[in-house]
Length: 400
Image (cartoon, rainbow, N blue to C red):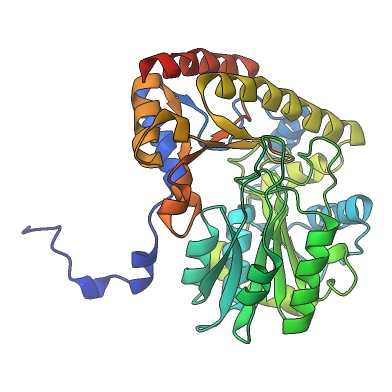
């Protein structure tokens, strides 16, 4: 068959040269290879709510097994609209503003493909969730990065410079991506910060794309504010959300966009030819999920707060400097005390020799040097899993 590796370069798109495969998911493969505790990828290792699983089972048993309406089952779209009104006071037309996608991951790329042209620019805060840069490139846009600076104290806040943010906006700026609560930092953007972003979007005629997948996972009295709820933003915001994090079903792949009708129409066109539609029986389960009582969300946040407060002391005891998250379920840490050359070297040692998988911080930055002394841990795990990780991490200081 000849040399199968000798594929002509012209067979490949130039776009794929600008990014790598997911580092997060690679760390899961390494955790499996070395038998490590996986605190890298953000998926729970505990059961999803029984009511939601039962709803999915009943939908399959009732033969809800064929295509749903391309842009989402009617009852799920209505549930999404209802909950946006309850949670954020935002009035949404489920018929013209909601598109159900195969997870928030598809929702993001469908949105960027729908709104961006070659030469456009997309502003992204860094450290960023690793999909945003590649999604911008795939859509033909150029990402422009604005730094979130780590707090100077363990309980401080990640901040950005107003002048640096303003400098990122120009005549080519099409959109800004705002992820709040934020992955990987755990930052929850304040109303003042969001209003600053709003004012820049209005001034430069820019769209905001908000990833709000962690909206119910909040700590220490913080409040989630949807950008679309701010004055002047209803017609220039795409809100992205999904079932994965709130209902512990990351493998179900049911997410959605909420946007003004003209933008929704464009997203639906792209979505139709990307995936046709999200899994029909799991959309039925999504309707049940969005009907859970308020106490469910209170218990969700309280449970994750307890997990956060269980893991952080173990990390600090092992020698990490932790940046305490206000939302989401990750802890960013500083590893400079361990004396490793960079985060990749440290993460490899951690998973192979200590038996705990984390995500190298460099994967969240444009310039790997900016994350070379950081790693991220996920605490969306059972107490027993976190305790196992703590025992292994206790060996870290003595082993180095």
